[in-house]
Structure formats: structure tokens, C-alpha cells
Image 1: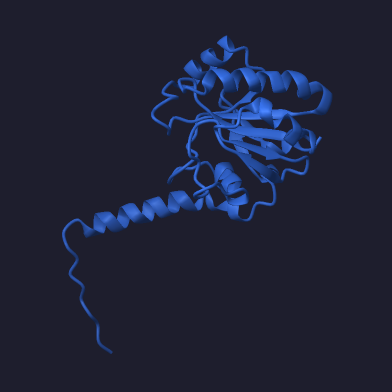
Image 2: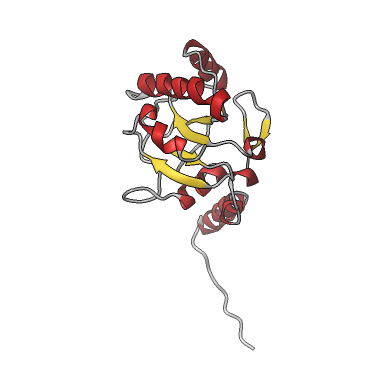
Length: 193
């Protein structure tokens, strides 16, 4: 039996160690591949509480990545509020908003600042902890959403205010880009109530 001795370049073990740590961190996010619905996930609320998404069972949900300093912010927040007012009580619509700072730094604040902004907008829908929707640290829910409804030119999220419609069984049934205002989703949502 012969053994080969490998001489590794300086710094190479650090690269291997970094890769191993990154792979370990990512493995915690791999559960999205086995998920059957959004009910298999938990997300942190903007107040830091764990929220099992099974709490939304039997509700049509609109899941959206939000930002407070985007050119689309005023229209989207206004129209998301209008949809909530129109359908939350009468049809059981739930809106899950996830702040994200990955697009031109348009959600730079911490959770307290985001809450303050949302209060000024009179937000009634559910606001969650700031997350990543693309890249290595993507929240598992968002990996699942992208897997279930890929986008044009790739499944990655292109900008703030990408919207996913989820039916009453927790299945992701539609994806709409940032250019689709929430008010234009009425007929889409009504199909699932």
C-alpha cells in the first residue's frame, strides 16, 4: 500500500475550513427541498418572535419582500394596506411582508426603524424580521418560494416587492414581479378564496 503526501499551499486549509463552515451553515437551510407547503417553515416576526407559518393554515397568503426607501414603496404599501382592508376580514387574506436590504440598500434600518416606518404607513398586515431573499443566507422560506415558482430569467428575486400568492393549502400558486402593483392582483387572489 502506498500513501501520497499532499503539500497544501499556505492559506489553503483556511479556504477548506471556510468552505466547511459555509456548507454547515447552508445545510440548515436545505429543508426547503423537502417542504410540502409554507406550513413547514417558521419565521421571526419583526418583534423577534418565532411564528410557525402553519398559523396561516386555511388562509390565502400574499408573501412579499418589502423596502422602505424604494421608488415602489409608496404604491406597494398603500395598495397592500388596501388589499388587507378589503379581504382580511371578509375572505381571510393574510399578507406576510419580509423587509430585505439586498436591492440597492433600500431597507437599511434595523427592526425598530422598520417598525416605525410601518407604523407611519398604518400597516395592519404581518411584518417579519429583515432577511435575505437571494444568496448564501437566503431564508429557507424564500428558497422554497423560488423553487416552487421560478421567475423570468431565473428564479432569483430581481427587486423589492416580488409577490407570491399562496393558496389555502399552503401551496405557492403564483409569482408576480415588482412591476405588478398589489391592486392588480385582486382577480388573481379571488380565484383562491
